[in-house]
Length: 285
Image 1: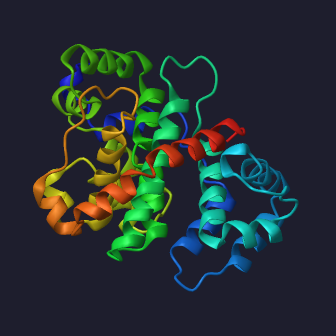
Image 2: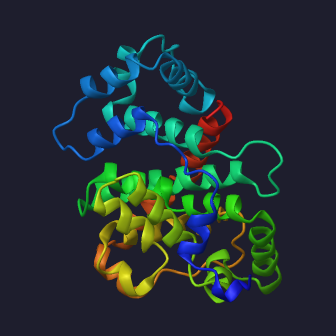
């Protein structure tokens, strides 16, 4: 089978099993999609999943969160962290548990998840600061923007690692190699998974177009994700497999309306967000 003929259908038809969407993610996505959801809604979800609740408490009690006292229950976590942060942690823990590749992988998926969490946190922060979009949706798009890479690795690990090698040798991005060698890319594969999981259309489009300059202007969440990815790169934290990520198109800056002081304010948070992301992944997420 030649690489030139590999398209989305070929890849998705040969994935042995579609990752099952846990009930907890379905319920958390419902709260993300509902502007009227509250801390009580998230707490109600978590009390029915003791393992996830315990994992969240382990994360928030890590040194990177800098709590002055040990958080012993969900009520205390909600008060100290806030509703949005707690929901983001719960969603992140659930998604990584459902999708993670453990043991034997040649690719650094741990670093990929840290990168994705940082992008999620930055995208949400930009959306909140500029008031251009809903931060909770920006967070999920950022978290899942590279999820297609996991499916592509499952489809053909040797092909995937060859693309990583080519990206390194050519000093380019993984996505550039994909689009040259295939009739699809990880963004399209990831958006396909989001469709299978019946995610809201804003999330699907955000994942699909996060590396497509021609589409970024039309889809605000894709644009926010693209800018957040660039910020991570500026701070020398590009995703594994990318060796020269494409810079943000000038039209995207205009679409988002980000001024320099906002850019540098959010950029200054990259290191802290990276530490928090490391804590989340290191806590067994």
